[in-house]
Length: 599
Image (cartoon, rainbow, N blue to C red; front, side):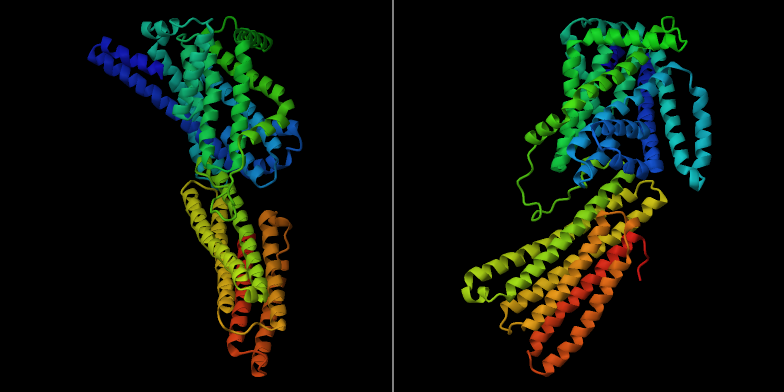
């Protein structure tokens, strides 16, 4: 931002017409940066829509060790052009237990390497005339967007065209500004000794602050290339800005992770540790390393038939910046990959789990405001949250079973105070869970509503509709559990007679069947639906329906035979009927997950 401050200070030296012209040029510069950032975002989202499920599967399957994790992170990030997207997927898999934190750290290291492809795209775009490619890409893109089967390819071409247009405009604006011959700008950079360690630190911090402010490492890289290619800024100071950009982007992710769960914060800290460690060791060999990269660019260019020595020296600096970015991250990853277990221990030591009973505290585990980046990834986060919701509802039903056992014990009645206290405490927990289920339904629905506002694929829209149905039915399961608990409490607190041993046996049998239905539901929610046999759920539902009909008939006979009072029989059948309703809700969840229309 010091660059723009300098221009503003020098506006007073020009006539009004010249001043307006310079203001227009600065606005043109900002607009070209906006085009570049929008193009990167659109291109990344289109790539994720085209290959999101396959990339997520690859991320989960190809991280058997630290080396495959590093390679996977590199390939996935280079494919979707977003290290943030890779980090989000990685963290969600850690939370789901599909990846260990150590594997996630290796993937994040790979993501740092993969994201350097962006710098190469910018270097190529700024060094060659690509204006002839932009408008055909727009034309082909708009045609493909209106073709249903090819619209994501069209979105990608549009994003790529915007990116290239932004680079072309940025290059032209840099030439118009003629920064290399602007006395104020050149004097500013000349005031810093390029060989001084303090200069490197100043520009490193400046790069970090700029990245944090604009929330885009690509934009800072573009500004750096503009300043270096116009001859305004020496290469040493430009590379210091690139190092600062590496740290600035990790500050952003760590701030975003503050509201996330423990594993997300640990992954973000590991990302920061990776880049800070790299910056520390590179500072010891800073000038030597840059000289090596310059030599490497010349050598590779000569090997490819390019006379880099006779090429515009300022334009060559774009390739030097890109090469430095890649070499820095590759070498840093090559060093730290051997110390992943130690990094894991370090981040676990720094970030301790929150000392809260998470089962008693309403908190979404996977959905976090700081990590909602793209619709396709947001749907993945919501799916994980619904899995957690489903497991929580089965735990709630387990408490209901425990409540029934507590009420059947004579200890509570005899000891009074202690037994009654345990019963009331358990009932209060169930009551709290019912409130949690209501809140989870509302929060997940709000999140899905925000996601649905974006441009989504047809498959994703269908997933969102199914998930909205799932959370509605899961909340109904929570209501059914609470209704059963209230009925048991009313019986326990009242003056009605105890259930007979036969009634207790039947209740336990019915609850066991219901719990089996919940177990089958959670196996589906946490597994792959392609391998799930839905007939297992339907068979349990039929068994529950038949058992309920049998108990209903038997209840009438037992009341007529005066085995227990009509009031006890009514409470008994209320619990049985509520279990049968709960099983129906389970079937509805399974049907929604499997894509079966509601019966």
